[in-house]
Image 1 (cartoon, one colour):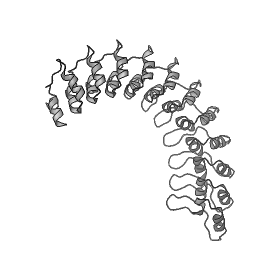
Image 2 (cartoon, helix red, strand yellow):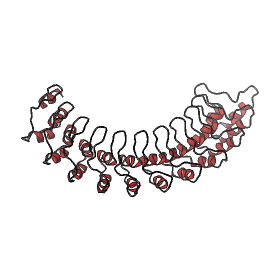
Image 3 (tube, helix red, strand yellow):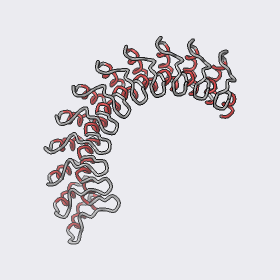
Image 4 (cartoon, helix red, strand yellow):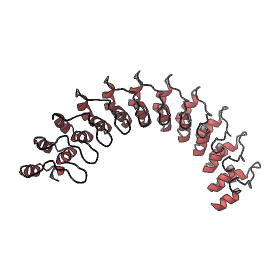
Length: 390
């Protein structure tokens, strides 16, 4: 308790007792007094413990299996890290028992650049050692966390693979940095000849560009689109969705404009998973401006039904109550306003009635080519039945 509070005087009094056990761990976390001193950054107390022969400077805790050096690195205690490294037998490459994370990895993950620098100066350090849970290297943690200075340190070494994919999802440091929108880090990685800018991960089959478009990082997207070795229309292997599909669904107008200007982008690409086109996704999300962009093109089918449910863009928009999108689609000559899906035979009117979308229902009822009494194939319910049931 005294150590945890950093009360040096009390610690000194207790350590002077002959029958004191200076290495006794608590019963909840398995932390010894030294571990508590390390975690709290109490350097003078740490010195007292390290000056005793009956204190194990490499004792692991009972919860994570981490040693004092790991916790010092985790909390960014530079002075404590130096003291521990001065002790013989302290292994800087020892991963913890729960996740296999080394002190370097823990310091990197939390952005403690000073500790990272101290550890990288060691002759026997392994700067590319991955953790045991996800297979992330320190560089991956630095890139994914936006720790630019740490990334510079790792990229300045020859014993670090800048394009090493983790074992959990097969994503590279560039992939993680791209998702986070860390422009400086992305730029550094793209400047490397040994980094593949179009490498798809193994978990989802998504490229860095795909992650950037989903999260709306326009500057990062521009960096990739300016390269000749990046396919702007590459679909992922899990759902078959392209970067345009992700940007359209999320409503990122600027990114959609950039992609539509690219001659190698198919604006009507249907995903292999559910067969939904970018127009389907953005209509269902209610992004009027993007729907308008796509409808103005001659190479987009405004009535393209997906393969999973057989629903058209109008069906998705009507079911979500996006009146502006419904109005645009109804104004297009190639859109069937009474198209029944292949899932349960619901028409756009049926979906709108079930959702209580009055404005959309009125628009559809004003049309002569919409059957207001069309029964679905699931229960034989009409739009009236659907509205009453809800």
